[in-house]
Image (tube, rainbow, N blue to C red; front, side, top):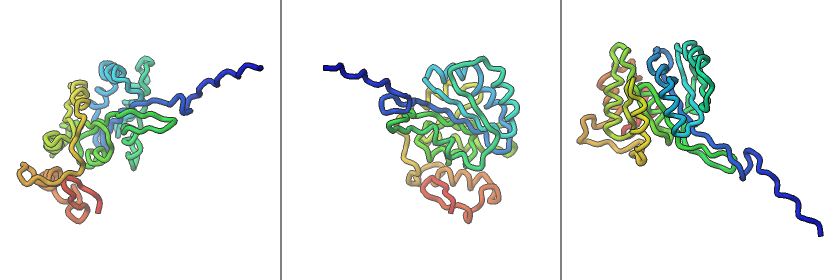
Length: 226
């Protein structure tokens, strides 16, 4: 009686050995420079923090600072974190979705992290993913209302407001937000801003900067294209 053949070794991508990943996606916006944010997320201390939390990928949308990002990454020593970046894309949905958990027989993508400038559009896009979210106001902008938007959204539990120089601490806070409120929630008539983010945007920005009522419709705190 012949012996049974040895069991085949599992191959990557098979149900026996799945590809595991954990992503951070950073976006600075399309046009304004936000070099301090880029500098911090590719700093030695920040990268070490990500590696200690088993993150495998860091992707940065750099806007006008793409050349700076490329030079800084090229000067870094090799490490376990895959760091890539690009200047601009018309649609960041796919990149943000990489930070959302997903699992099948071939892939196990663990809950990740999105770090965005505190522009309303990027925050709303990020909230459509099931990912931890840190919003960092770009305080160098004129007529800047990003801090007010980030503060209101943090107060309501949807994100953590990060500040340049303390993003490592913000990661720890975001990781503890296991149960975020449902998005979009019902409006709270007793809140400082009863309509949430839409009220903040409407009160702080002129109509030509947020599209006005004809460009979007209110849905709880949400702002969705009409």
